Length: 599
Image (cartoon, rainbow, N blue to C red):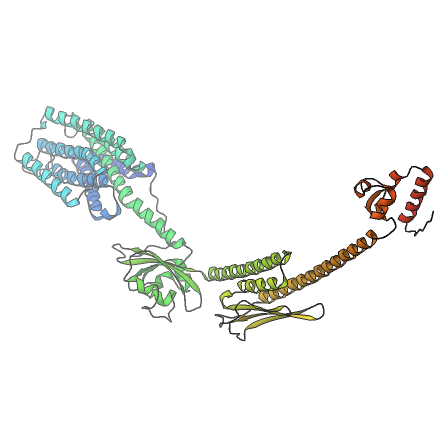
């Protein structure tokens, strides 16, 4: 059995409009009334009873053969009940007055059979509430109804059932009380059904309520009458047709229409899945496929049934025993996902979920998705991530070397030593790499015992036009993959050379500045010793204040050096003309004019 595919499947409504539901019983009732008017009551009675018997037996047959489509045990129990009530109604039809088909037939016997069937039907409506929360077995229920029906037949045909009808008098009090009791039972069943409304759908609630209400009015019509062929009997039988019809509709909606509507939607949904999806047996044979599966291999979906899923969707160059998907079909029962490469060099993702049903025992639902683009993106992402990691290592290496260069108290030897130990970490295989620097300051290596292989990078630069510094990075073990050196690593070595060259230039400049400062300090020291021993007074000023005075100057002015350094020359002069002359000389000296004055 295969599920209809979307282009060919017909939409199935879960619920028919109420007016459409009422058409069949209304037409049948009008037909029966017309027949009664044209013929007689017996024909009308026979037709109405056969109609309800047919509906009841059909409902019982449908529910007995369609249990797999419904989990509503309430409907199942009622359908079985009206089927057995229909069996009693057959006897009621045969025993009806005027039929002359049974030896004991007549008004009392047919009425006894009628009231027995209605009591059984009303009690079934009441007890069916129990099966909202409990399951049943059809054979147990059928045996129970059979025993009840047999007991009623024995009691009625052996004369042990109370009299229900008397000729020329009408129904007995027992019959009247039974009808009212049936009405009360139906009202109780209706109240309980509404109390349990959360357990049923709105459609089922509607049709079962209409069925019980119709039966209540039917029993009201049958509760008190004198003639078996009167107007009350016509109304009662018409309402019985409606009651049985509503039960049948409830059964069809709940047991057949709704499940098949769900199956139709499921089939449409199954075909609307954009990825190839199919049901495969444990040996790998396709049992069913959707439209996408057919498009995937350029074929019709129904043509895939019976073919090997391995040949169509996996790599047929690999045996089924070695296929990552097919090798698990017969041994695993859990959901799994496998990514494989088919014979077209395309990556596909196979997602499998176990399924075990009457239609597909020990089978799998397999979905195949082309993930070639996704795989390419994953490879690209991994490459970008790897490249980013390599660039980060290079940046960290350059940052560390820059920080080393920034240290003022580090010598060139220390810088070269630290650099050769930092360099390997910036390369793609740091555990295989050795760094070495050869210079006038010595040879520096991260692993002096390492054996040099042909794989190497080398960078030279000169310093001060004479010294040659050579940076060498080589492999001490064979690299695990190509390329051995990345273009970015070549650029890294160039950057390190530039950093070291600028560092050496700075070190050289700082060294020259230090030497010049030392010479200046020595010259200053010699000059100070010379003027300290001079026999003339010497002073050094900053604008008008003394910065330095030699001992002879202190003797000439009669002041101590400490006192003079806190004042200026003008503070020692009292004569205004002399002060003016000194200021004029200072002004010329500040302008760079060399003056020699004698007084």
